[in-house]
Length: 178
Picture (cartoon, rainbow, N blue to C red):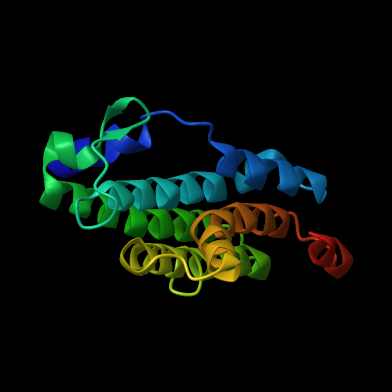
């Protein structure tokens, strides 16, 4: 249907897939198999894609192009693009949580919580909010610029590292080192 087509359009549009790679490689670095973090990698990529769809919307950055192709809202309309982003956001957590049912591992759920925290109101969403405010009021100082970068961009990268490592049941020292 239209919603699934809009979700696939952006999710499969390409990109470096750095977040899934980080999750799998840091799982391996902590002593696990890369495949143990694959579901987190997929989930984080869905979250990243949802954020790009929403970021391109007219009410945000109003970008008509993404990765050399028309932005989601240019192809499917603003309302369907909004729903595609919402669908990817919620499906990411459905995907990760359903994958974890078979593990019965507290660290797996700690990893999901880490991703939720860094994608949400104290992470990526907070960074986007300050970015929007700064577009009308200007960036007040270097700390504000660093806040935007740390939360809007870095938090999902950090979540990928930590979630991947948690899949391998790291020691406390390994986790603190990350």
